Amino acid sequence: MDALKVIENEIKGKSVELTSLKKEKTALITIDMVNGFVYTGPLSSPRVASIVDNIVSLNERTKGYKKVFFIDSHDEECAEFNSFPLHCLRNTEEANLIQELIPFTKGQESICIEKNSTNGFNNDNFQEWLNKYIDIIDNYIIMGCVTDICVLQFTLSLKAYFNDRNINKRILVPINAVETYDGGSHDGYLMNLFALYNMHTSGIEIVDKIN
Image 1: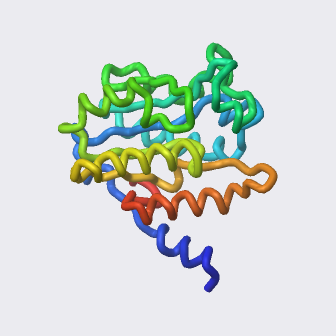
Image 2 (image 1 turned 135 degrees about the vertical axis):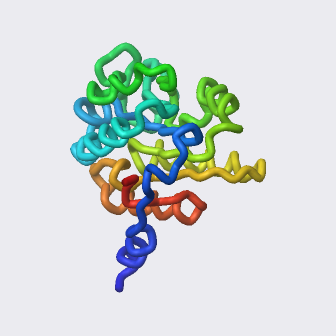
């Protein structure tokens, strides 16, 4: 059996029942499901578009849960553009949350957070949200894109934050609700798999889906 199959077998085959997670102690965090990564622009990807239905479905089944929607939104002079193509400029169509998810942002338990870097964990508004609910939320379900950059950085930062304070929290990443892109030497399948394995070995729960 080759190494990739070994990794796949290690991270796949597990699922979690939504009913096993107490509503009042569970939050959904959706990362960067904006038009610029899903439907239009230089970083949009059909691979990412393929997870839209799964993310919508989980949001539909979790009405009234606490939810965070990260929105990639940059000024033209953003330092990130030294590493990535111009994308998701503030006040453009690319920087808008995809239409399918907008209904789930309307509840009083939902918050949208614009972020100016790949790692939303560092955002002041998220830190405020985290501090507000840290004694309430025990389960964090992470969804969105892209698995090997924004999702990976956020989940590892969140896990390290809890570990540093000896706080036991569950961070769950459903495989059917995260994706990355294909492009040049960036093989979407490999990068997705490696990112999931990285999270898995760091103590994050990788599951096929949330039933």
